[in-house]
Amino acid sequence: MAKDTNDILAQDAHLIQSFADLNALKQQGARTVISRAKGAYVYDSEGNELIDGIGGLWCVNIGHGNEEMVSAISNQLQTLDFYSTFYNFTHPAAAALAEKIAQLAPGHLNAVYFGNSGSVANDSAIRMLHHYNIRKGKPNKKLVLSRHGAYHGSTHLAMAMTTPGYSEGWHAASELVHHLRSPHHWREGGEMTEVEFLDALIDDLKQSIERIGAENICAFIAEPIQGAGGVVTAPAGYHKRAWEICQANDIKYVADEVVTAFGRLGHFFASEDVFGMVPDIITTAKGLTSGYQPLSATIVSDDIHEVISGPDGMFLHGMTYSGHPAAAAAGLTNIDIMEREGIPERVQTTGKQFENNLRGLMDIELVGEVRGSHFMMGIEFVKDRATKASHPAEAQVGLKVARACQKRGLIARPLGNVLILSPTLIMDAPMIDQIESTLRDAITEVAAGL
Ligand code: PLP
Image 1 (cartoon, helix red, strand yellow):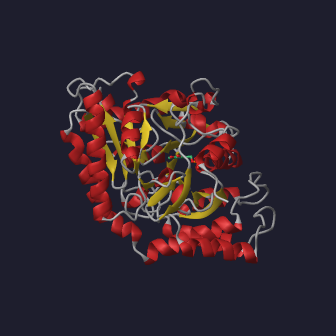
Image 2 (cartoon, rainbow, N blue to C red):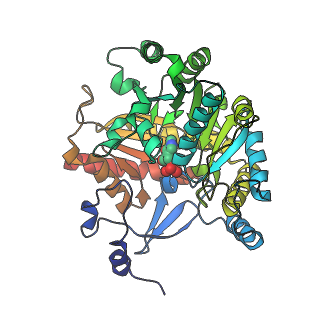
Image 3 (spheres, helix red, strand yellow):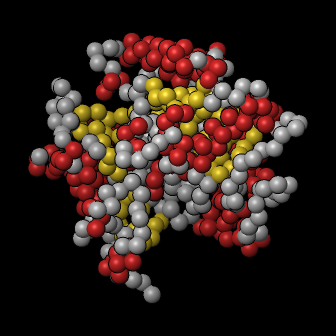
């Protein structure tokens, strides 16, 4: 029997939400109950239809309620509900998906470790590199270079690699991580041109390696575009130059493609196709199953695989649900749908249109910067465009715009003074236009009330 909103919220008092002001959520009307979903839309418990402008959580790439996905998962459960990939066991769905991912991933990335979340994929990458270096006789080579503005997850190590601001009021395993400068030119570049700023970022990387010692650093980890840090694109050429420096210093480059893979930027993986380099490890999750099942992959190079699978050693790492049959079946079907329907290729056109439409919002005074690429976009609001001064946090500009959007039938994600848009990849031209006009009306309304 369908419950009404108040009944659900009464039960929900027992649920701890993620990344929320838990106290504010106790107030009447603070929470939204999403009851069902289809295609590019979700429906709340009051029956309102909303465009899912954040694709679940940057993950529902093929759209909601895909019946082929639901059948594939259900069929898999009927054949083999669960078996692990521990010890000497494997199963057909995990094996087939590992092979498929190896085929899609660039270059020498041919071995796949499955986990259940992006956080676990990133923790696994670093644990595997520690193991790799110990096996190579370099036990001190264990520190990680990350960047201000990064988001790599919420497990202890992944959070330590995330920008320090996220750990406020918590402890982080910060002794393992050094944070490099944020690559955000518009906010951090001062008077520098983009090219000068790129040189400054590369100098920061070089000097940090010199100071810490390459013999102590196992990895440089970077999102191709920083997502939860506010959708920040680095200056053109940054990733390739950083990768070259890592190569020269025997530091493994870990590309966190939890968001950017599986079509969001118009390709299965962005590292090579968009940024022109093949990392040593790619981590991914989210769009791998379009969110239908929790699954992540840590995809490692032949070199790493060879060392960790060499004689006289045990791979002492594993999660019970690594490569769960239902999740692996979801991954296989998701990729099949994406290939058959040419979703990444379509995004090269529709995503670009989305990006261009959103960039058009720069004509509203409150908008300081529109950034990102294709279906991964952020809009930053400012009090003063010339100085880039922000409204104070109490003004809750992002939250107000998100609420104004939701009132008009669009879910967008507020993050301080930034609004994030990462819709499903099945958006067509009319939907894209609708998102733009909704944003325009919502931002204009909020600007008038500030
Ligand atoms: N890495 C990136 C770039 C992410 O955006 C996220 C989540 O948003 C994660 C890692 C963590 O993934 P999960 O929430 O599945 O643990």
